[in-house]
Image 1: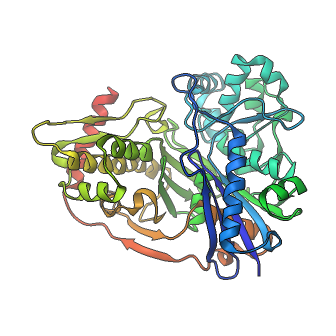
Image 2: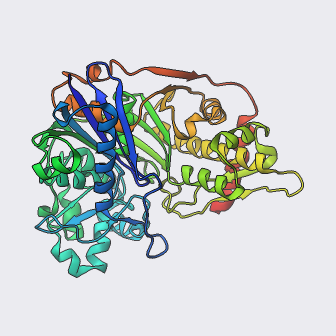
Image 3: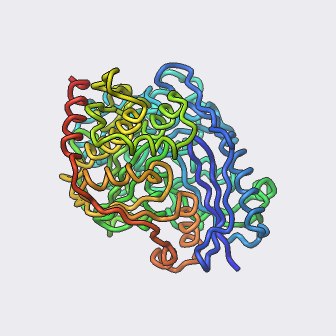
Amino acid sequence: MAYLIGIDVGSSSVKASVLDAETGVCAGTAFAPKEEQRINSPQAGFAEQDPQMWYDNARIAVREAMTAARISGDAIKGIGISYQMHGLVCVDKDQKVLRPSIIWCDSRAVSYGQAAFDAIGSEKCLSHLLNSPGNFTAMKLAWIKENEPELFAKIHKIMLPGDWLAMKLTGEAQTTPSGLSEGIFWDFKQDQVCDFLLEHAGFSSDLISDVVPTFSVQATLTKAAADDFGLSAGTPVSYRAGDQPNNALSLNVLNPGEIAATAGTSGVVYGVTDQVRYDPQSRVNTFAHVNHTPDAARLGILLCINGTGCFNSWVKRTLGISSYEEMNALAESAPVGAEGLSALPFGNGAERVLCNKNLGASFSGLDFNRHTSAHICRALQEGIVFSFQYGIEIMKPLGLEISKIRAGKANMFLSELFCKTLSSISGAGIDLYETDGSLGAARGAGYGAGVYKSLPEAFASLKQVKSIAPETGPYAEAYAAWKTALEQKLS
């Protein structure tokens, strides 16, 4: 029997799942560490992680998943990697990490992105890159070039977190067009690494790793890595993608008009289009989807709210609530609109949807005589949903018609209230599936390794477990009050 393994490198943990390729059933899964991975913040707005921590936790998770599946390493026919997007890892000529990774929620490069946008010109950036350089990977490298010049001079290759893990497994420094587009290195008009961006920033093209197809036998496991992970040398790494394109893949969201959503550490709405469009203010971003080709455009329009899950867990801890189930029940006991209490969930760094402003999280309309912990829990969930809707309204002019949202039955989508509110305010039905990023990466690896002959075959066994339809209620009034609170905060 053939099995596949997917590794999902998040900022909180690393998860690994073993998939039975024939049945599509998860044979074993595990994550590490059991507590959250450490994010270091040496200065306000900085967020860094040690890449070695990802490797160590991936090794633990893979070994535990293999033990749960009760299979040997030679049964694995492909390895897929999903990873936290927009991070930067720098290595020297010996493939040694030169500094901690600057990860997705780090805000230090905002001014560098704005300066590049102004210098290159908005029309050129948006028509070629489909985005402002913003706070993405390329500008994080620009920060290093200016602030750590001696270290910059030692850089042999730059890579995204998943590219680095793949290099540790195979010894090969590689990346993909989808990955380069998320770092704002990809020129969609020329279908290549963007020369004018490299020239503007003073980066040598030699810093870019070899470009390989997203689905392909990219490289194979070294003996050292195989011994570490309990796998077999020569096993192919046959898929890699950033976490949000991969989440869409996990939900079989591959074609124009299909929408994926997630609400974990961050909250994301990701829609696929075949229209090459962009938001003039770069409040939502357009990247190459996993199945994008020059001949058949498949672009992912991404709305990201950085602080959704962080806000949820902060409220849980601060109120001393024992479980998320209790929290959801409390929220259900308060009325729609939380009797005038609004929550703005923007407390985890600069938010692209707010033009890279670092607004902070806040509650508006708090009344000490009326509002209880139930109102706070309700306002929190509604505030996260309303931030999604705020972004969806920006996405619609880019060619997305949202009638159905697919999501994994996990994280905040376990809350009936959250699903009901999102469906009702957006007018879209929500279909929930039992899948996650690690299982999606395993299916992607199966297609890349040739175990599956097509993506439809890879997802033939994916099963829907629940459907939520929009309902009537005072959701529009609550959303209008929330937007007023946001506009006051922005003014």
